[in-house]
Amino acid sequence: MIEQVNAFEIPSHLNASIPAEKRGCERDDVRLMVLDRLKGDAVQAEFRELPDYLEAGDVLVLNNSRTIPAVLTGRQGQRKVEVRLSRKIEDGVWDALIVGDLARLDQAIEFSGGVMGEATGEGIENPLVRLRFSVKGNDFADFLYRQGEPVRYEYIKTPWPLEVYQNVYGSVPGSVEMASAGRAFSWRLIRALKAKGVKITFVQLHTGLSYYGEDRWPNPTHHPEAYAVTEEAVDVINEAKKQGRRVIAVGTTVVRALETAARNDGGFSASRGLTDLYIRKTTSLQVVDGLLTGFHEPEASHLEMLGAFVEQDVLMKAYESAVVQGYKWHEFGDVNLIL
Image (cartoon, rainbow, N blue to C red; front, side):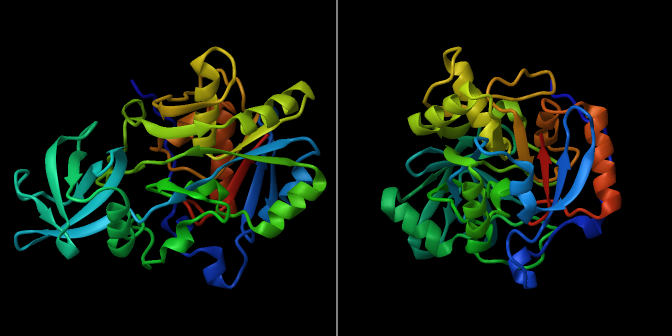
């Protein structure tokens, strides 16, 4: 059973709908709340000041997954159908969300260029559908990048291009939604972190859909995602641990990948595959000491994960303060550093 966090109200004007660079700023021109996970103290800062809150030898672990254009529009007879890809099952086969009512499960969806999508059954959980496309491999990738659009939720009114939904360091396509905790990083800031002696390494986790619409969220225990933790990342992290330095995950996706690798054999070694690890407030973290993340809706499972880092009453107090202070929510919003 999924535990629920305390509810709080996010005013609609705090839903960030415009990326910083589209407002004439730089990516790192967003705000940063630095939360002491033990004392509960919260410091208001700017994200470009991140190096001031880290120490030489600390390790930042980033997710190098790159966002794909996962929203497709097709037709079922005369009916227009929107398809949101959620997770790749195998080459040419995806779990997907059909937005609106699907006229007939036994009638294929036709996309431009003659590509067809056939619903072969239910997906891993309701309301997902298992969808088999008539193209595979490079042909599918070509079809997707020609016709697909990035996932865009109702609080974003402008159809921003795919590049807006990429982290600057993203290199491996596969995420349905941007691993948004790293969005505010610029190359300028990464250079400043390295100049201070902060170590940077990468893991990979391809995100699935985080919201099904109509107040429906994925059950995190039925939401496997593909991940990879390399030998290089393991070596950097193990060396930091030996030296008593902190390992800070950039995003809940990184926490999920690292803690999965730590649980595979009781140690911490290179690992890849699918993870269905669900981190609750009662979870004992084995690798990660701190977290850099956005501000999450009260219904999202990401918010419960934060309970593994900080007591719930401290977290709710910080979130209530963030609302009062006017921090922005969601992928184009501000950032929270928990140390």
